[in-house]
Image 1 (cartoon, rainbow, N blue to C red):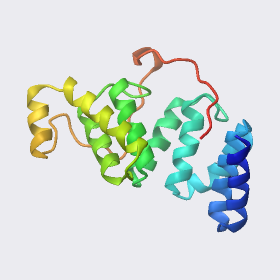
Image 2 (cartoon, one colour):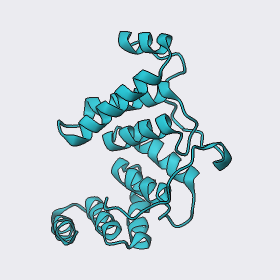
Image 3 (tube, rainbow, N blue to C red):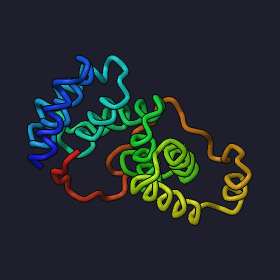
Image 4 (tube, rainbow, N blue to C red):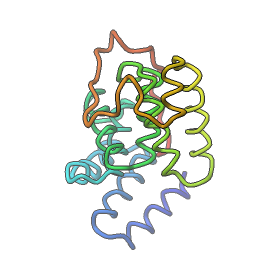
Length: 182
């Protein structure tokens, strides 16, 4: 963990001001200083920085945000995904597949995971997204599978610009948040 902090600190010295705030936020989150991390990410996320939107969304969704605000986390993750951030696309696909903060929607899950696979470099993250997409495909109806195989729009719709968070009573149970390096 110290290694990541040192790398982030070095990068912040070399980065532009907006990236400096992002790198400082990542370092703060890795160190468990979520208040500072949110303070670093917030202005960048509000300015449309997809990476900052993703990392701030993770803080909210993992229960480390300034408030316990899952709908804000869903909104930020959706914005980051719509802005083309592949990690956010993969995460949003998983959220739709599992009903984490949103209603389960296999068509949206498949679409977001497919977009992330197209954008992620070869490696573990891409392999995980591919495995998740393939698992979602197995849960789809035959009509949905045929549409996905043909590359046609899936019957349940395409990703919306804004996700609609659902009430906690409608969500699948989720484990307690655990601190994890970003």
